[in-house]
Length: 250
Image (cartoon, rainbow, N blue to C red; front, side):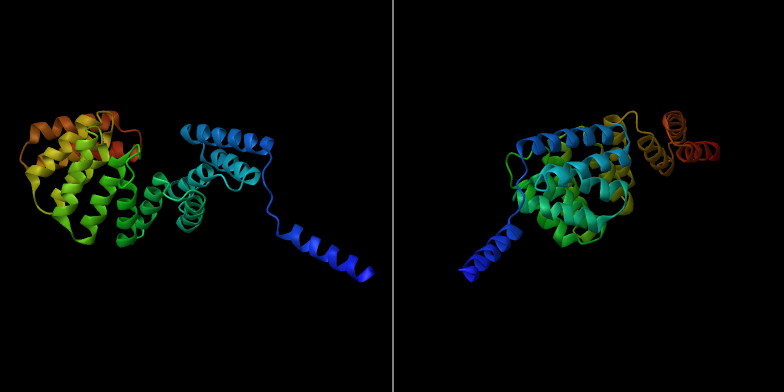
């Protein structure tokens, strides 16, 4: 009898050890609150506070795919810890297969690591989702990955598709300008940087790039205006100084 009871207790202990904690409704609500606080802190530029809140959200609910995605973005972009970001992205995809935003974000990590084939595969998977709300991001980054892999024309066409989908997609115009510049097509580079500036009139970098292109085209007066606008709109002192230096060199 004693042996049977001991055996039963042992089996119960093993079963309890193997049981996964299921968050209570209160814990889930707490995780959602922490997640929202994390997003607000991130939008305000308080990345450390955002990270702390998202960590607390995942402590309350470890199976919260949106929180895994959000903390991974911080790890990749704000803290330069790509491998930790990959772990969270993979967990989010395990919890929600086909989570298109996560597929794109994970592809962004691979793109930054020059793992182009892996990035391209994930971008294409994201674009297969008809409900993906921001396909132009995946399109634009897919085009850049193709270009970096050596498929220049296909890359250009893919990025063009992204700015057709969203005419206000600044990064698309910027990357088109860079590609044309690097491949020696100065006139198309200037045209693309001009579209970049039109789409993002408050971004100093757009004026800087367009101005540098205008110098190559011999349009010195237009370049002077671009560098002046660049200096006025630059938020960082480094960029402001670059704009001023180029303006003084004319």
